[in-house]
Length: 168
Image (cartoon, rainbow, N blue to C red; front, side, top):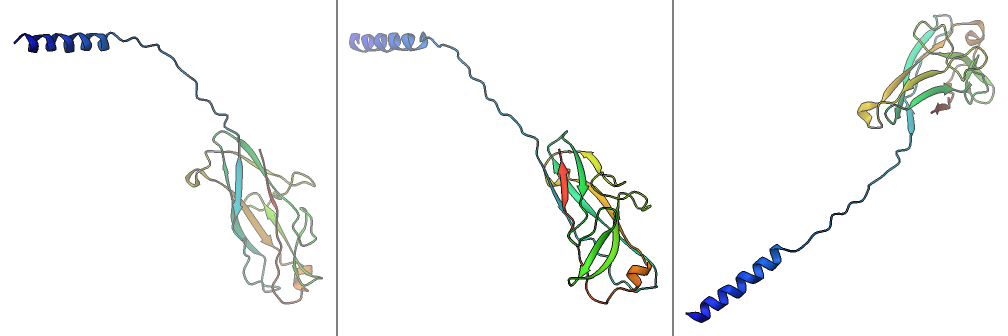
């Protein structure tokens, strides 16, 4: 029996030594620098079929802006690729046929949506996050007037491309 008791004493002494081990606390920081970012997409603004003399056409779309939360932004629109300006945009059919139209910031069609020059306005907002669920819709309203220029246009398909700029 003495051998068993000696064995028990040796194991017991080893357990005490392990329980008395020392620790040294330490820590480190984890950092990141979140950069502001924005992106934008837009669907086609389609006026549909225009019949000269039958009245103006209106349509609308949204510029969908996704920015980091709290990031202020401004949306501006250029004069288009059709040779127009922000004051008078043009849709083209071929090289020389055009229809006049314009874009506005509200459905009452009183304030031109442009780049902030020539009496036009931009539209601002604040980002709610970059996830799709946090997108901010910036409405764009368009009008194709039934004016003398449009009433003498050649029949065909007309188009223009508007560049959207989001500044933040």
